Each structure stands twice: as structure tokens, then as C-alpha cells.
Length: 427
Image (tube, rainbow, N blue to C red; front, side, top):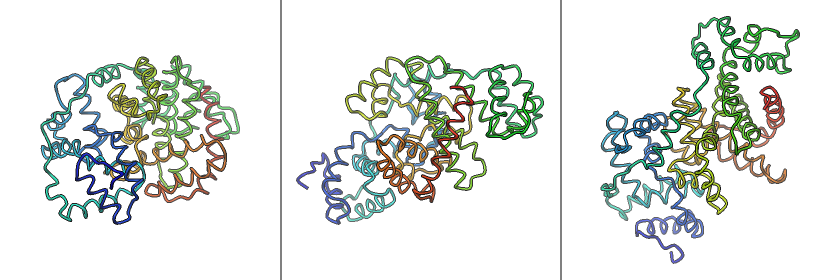
């Protein structure tokens, strides 16, 4: 292993073990080792990966840390009964464990499937090359940086939902709600009224006679879709004057991931497909928060990206957190369902790590897959796009048993619907 100079013999031994058994070659090992520095080793992400916390619990902990400047993530998790002392100790140890980081780097690189890798790691450790896995440094205390605390304080007061929308959403959460009462509340909002009437009269619903009243529109659209559409319209209105970013392009990307999420969930036989649409639509809301409230940091992030840093790494360096963290935190403040919060937090997460996580909702997995498929549209040519789709579909078989041809067949439907949606919302 002359080509790979590991700082710790244990990592070097594991690399030799993998290469000697022809599991990976030295080039792949060297690449993964060099990428260790890009593995996200923040305490909360490790705890999530190990199944010690859920995405919703991370936001609960961060909420308390927002004001308690001296409280560490583990401290708060222990006080809330979310993590045990052993779990906190384990997460701290993994944070300092270069072998753990190397294994995550292999997963992120797609070199070895997570289940295969950790079976190999178990065999390696049992060979006697490492007799004591649990001896790690625990002295280092992990603190939330000032930049994260400042970000969370801003997010707490950012973009509150309009009172009319909050009231409507509460009403629609009641399965026995009187739709006539919902229609009355909608009628107080001119923008919502116009949007719903446009939608009810669109070709999508195929109503034979013109829909002229809000009460009729509510009946035509239905309770579940109404909830989705009102929240979407309110968000688009909330950020309509945002400077420094192309909102039309942003909402088109959001709609595209939303519609792919819906199509994939329909193929999977899910019953609540509109919930998948909503999770997809809100998945990257953190990007808008960055542009709205962190213009200085955005300039720094964009500079790092121009230098060749991956977007997520650049965000963490500039702010101490990334846009998925910010978006999921905001959605949790708005008390949106757990699967919507998870989808926002994990939409950019490497699929190899999604495979390792426990209790992740189907919505979050599908949105992660939909974002990857949507990104294939950016290919320069049809051939390159087709190859990318084939690779994505193969990598996401753990989420959905679908083939590339079936995904390609969905493309026209997704494109048509997104175009129609953008006209409805008058972006």
C-alpha cells in the first residue's frame, strides 16, 4: 500500500485488507481516503446515521440550543431523553474515528454498498487487527458554533405563514371539517381565491361548466389537494419579492421534484400521493431562506463553489450548517408533518447513507430519489441523460423497484404537469 499513506495504521490495515481480497483496487482506496475530509462528521449527523436520533428530534435539540449558547448537542439530547449516555459517548467516539470516516467516504463514493462494507468491516475487526473498537477519545466537547446559533435565531422569525393560511391549514387537518366554512375563510384572501378558481377551471379537472365560486372550487379540488395547493401558493407569495435569485427557475425545480415524487409514489402504489408532492415541493425551501436572510454568507458560499467546493461543503464552511438543515428547521417550526421535515433534511443526503438510516419515511426516500432523477435533466444530450437515469434507477432499487424505461416513460407526463402547474400559480 505504498500509494496510500494513512495517518493511522488501523485505516491502512483495513485498506490493505480490502485490496488483498480484491474488494476494491488501490485507486479507489486512495480516492476514498483523500475524500475523508468531505465526510459530514457533525455530531447530529452521526447520531442520525447511527439511529440514535430522528430528523425531527435534531430540530427539537437545535431549538433549545438556539438560546442555550453553552449547551452541547449531546447535553440537550440527554436532558430530553432522546439519547443515552452510551449513545452520546459512541457518537463522540465515531466523530474522532478515522476508520468510520473512511468507511463513510467509501459509501459516499459508491465504491461498496453499505451493507457489504460493514459486513467486511466486522470481519476485519474480528481478525484481531483491532481488539478494542470502543477505545476512543471522549475529551473533545462538541459545541454548536456561534454561526449556527445566529442562523437559528434568524430562522425563528423568518417568513411566518399568513394568518389566513394558518387558519385554513388547521381547518383542513380536521377530517370532519365543513368545506363551506373553509371556502368562507379562503374568500378573505383575494390571491388564494383567484388561484383556486384558475385551477378548478383548468383542463386538469375537466369540469364541463365554469366554476365561479370558491365553494364550488373547494368541492372540485378536494380536501387533500386543497391543503397542498394552499400551502404551495402561500409559500410562493411569501418569497415573491426575494432579490438576488431566479425565483422562476427555483420554483420550476421545486415543482419538478414534487411531480417526480408524486409519479414515483403512484408507481409504488402509495395511497397519499399528494403528500409526496408536498414533500417534494418543499424539499429545498432552505435555499430561499439563505438568499433571503444570509446574503453575506451566500456570497461566500458562491465563492467557495467557484473554487471547486461541493455546494453542501461550502455552506457548512460558511455557516456551520447547510440549506437542508435550515429548510427542515423552518418546516418543523411551521409544524408540518414529520415526513415533510425529513424530506427537506435528507434530500441532498447521499443515497448510501439513506440506506443505513433507521425509521426514515418513504416520502423522504422518494424525494431523495426524485431529486436525483430531476438532476438528470441537466445532461447536455439525450444519450448522457439516459445513462444518468439508468445509473440513478439502479442505485435506488432499495427505494423502488423500477427500471430506466419506466422512468423515461414518465418524463412527458412530468413535463406537461409542471408546465401546467407553473401556469396555474402564475410564476
